[in-house]
Image (cartoon, rainbow, N blue to C red; front, side):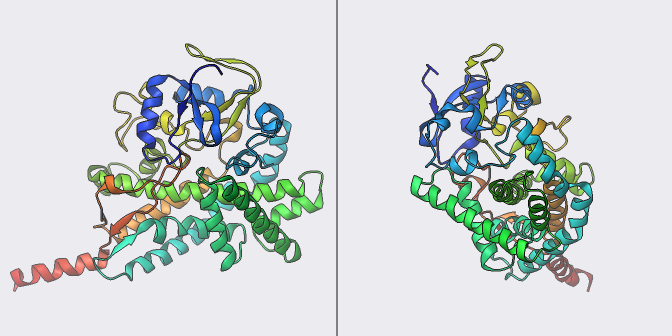
Amino acid sequence: MGQQPVVIDPSGADIHGEAARLRELGSAVLIEIPAGVQAWAITDHSLLKDLLTDHRVSKDPRQHWPAWQRGEYHDSWLQTWVGVTNMFTAYGADHRRLRKLIAPAFTARRTDAMLPRVERITTGLLDGLAAAPAGDVVDLRGAFSHPLPMQVICELFGVPDGEMRIELSRLSDAIMDPTLTPEQAGQTAIDIHTLLSKLVSIKRETPDDDLTSVLVSARDDDGERMTEQELVDTLLLVIVAGHETTVDLIGNAVHALLTHPDQLELVRTGKASWNDVIEETLRWDPSIANLPLRFAVEDIEIPGGPTIRKGEAIMPSYVAAGRDPEQHGAKAAEFDIQRPGQEHLAFGHGVHHCLGAPLARMEARIALPALFDRFPDLELAVPSEDLVPIEGFISGGYRTLPVRLTSATASASASTSVSAPASA
């Protein structure tokens, strides 16, 4: 690659600041990520959109990344990102085959059918929050934005209640952490595959009306269509991606609104919609900040920039592209739910566009208004600058979201008790 790479902060302590610095360096910047991997970070919205649909860009390291073919990085955190065999890492005909198998699990009909369940789970979690003593500080991530998508995806895929869901949650968080040691990363890969293989066995023995059973049936009815490894790795993809990204979409939207009360007021007065909030959050603070990795199938000349050589790694930086002034204007760094043209790439683009995007949007569309209706005086319990980002440069969210709650009922009671003496 020749030039000196920019070493990315593995802790992700200032993802947006780092993204801004990379944008200043160019549309394609050579970086170094944990384990010493060098890759080209794509920071420009237009260029990234083009590359995401370019046939010269692959996600299959087995075919197109010489370093992986040589056996490098197999014991690192990258194992659960590029070492899996599912549609996330497939290219060409393999990708079309696998996507065709999983696509029926995320049809509009299936997503719509989940709506009552999402509403029920949301109501239950809000009831739990309302039971907290008045004035108490509550971690909204731990009590709401994390368990909601987790419960939804577990119901969708028939993950049994209890220990299996707890372990799945723990392992999903670990997979998103690129700071794991090789030993931790290796154990995480073993543990998640063991757990998902157990889920497959359960559904093979006792099929039910869930998506794991659907995939097991597709695999067993015609084994040529999907190998057992592809089946397990596909579950890894859809279950982990299906809940982790939604966790931070909801959490980041809440954070954005609580730190921009003028924007919250626009929604409350009907001048903007919850859809506007969701799309602007995805642009301004995407759940996936940087997504490893893609690979150049042949040399790619970047207009006005470097040439990405065949076999070199590429990392889409959605966090950098989301605030690209060339795409979003001089005020790209501002959170503005009335922004004209909220185009973003937070769910990817092209053949790898996220199949679960409609489900994630639906969950946020139910969760956000329900939360702010129940707790109209919701406020952060700590200064925004004191919030601690999730470990790593992949996720764009916070470890905890401490808030103080005031329910609509409590607010109404307080208002009545204050005004009563004046009317007596």
